[in-house]
Length: 300
Image (cartoon, rainbow, N blue to C red; front, side, top):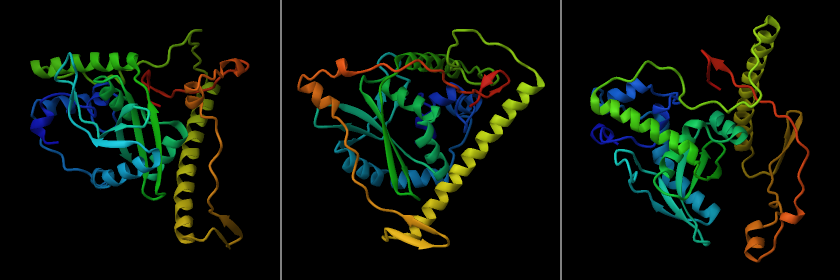
């Protein structure tokens, strides 16, 4: 998309910037872009790779999911025409469901993290931005070239998040039209998960040391898992089509397995079979999830 077209409104990749969660661009830089104060940016190698592989990934997705695809077209928000979107594809299936498909070609580390933790917030906001223009399902197709692996997620509209996105976009576009630069960066606009029992402050040396060690341990784990994925990809490449290879003090299996058998709940519901009476509630349990803060703002 050229600079002239970017100036006409806020697209899906702009909303994460507006909300302050984009790692690639600041709100001030986006404002300057919309005001026509910056030059076109050359696509990075990663961007060029994604553009080149997009049709292939779409084909793999369609064959895997049995969903038909149509190229995406430009969308406009019904109340705010400056809020636009251009999803990669639209999809439909045999049950007459329809949706928006967004394709991401990720590197090994980001791909492994998406498999463990789900889609990064930046991408989630982009897709919810598109879903604000149509009440349908959104889908991510995530692909890694080194592993030649596709994973995909269906996402429902989050109308509370969509409301935050549209409200922030409207405020930001008003600054663009009036020529008023946005305020200095203050971190993400999106709030952290609400707390119901209050936040207890603990600034002791022991607590701070434990948090620092947890942060370091998490980074070491992520680096180790990313490194492991890279090594596994190298070994798989060397194995070729051989299902079992032994050497170097290890025997490695890379074989096909039959898919797991699962109940088709949609088909059961369509046949009028109610499974709710067989459901059993588990015992309550506590979850542990740290949010690492920087200047009082969540930067996990």
